[in-house]
Length: 66
Image (tube, rainbow, N blue to C red; front, side, top):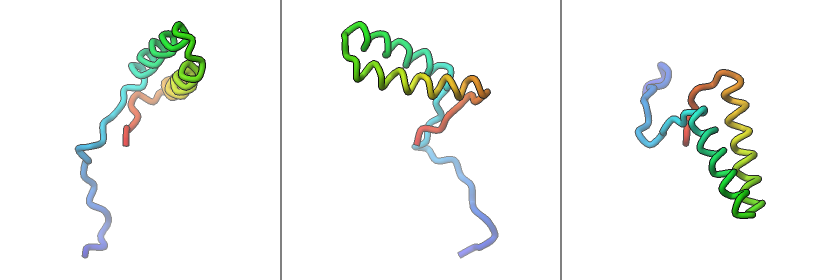
């Protein structure tokens, strides 16, 4: 067993989410849920959209999807 640091490797199952594209996608999903009067789902998409919008505002381009 080596104790000289970690062996950093890219994990194939981890994808990166484009934050700006996720905001657009979640905005459309929020509008669809709101149009269908599904308030709970609309709020879920809105909160998630707001989270990604804050990341975009801070200059974060990608978010790992574990």
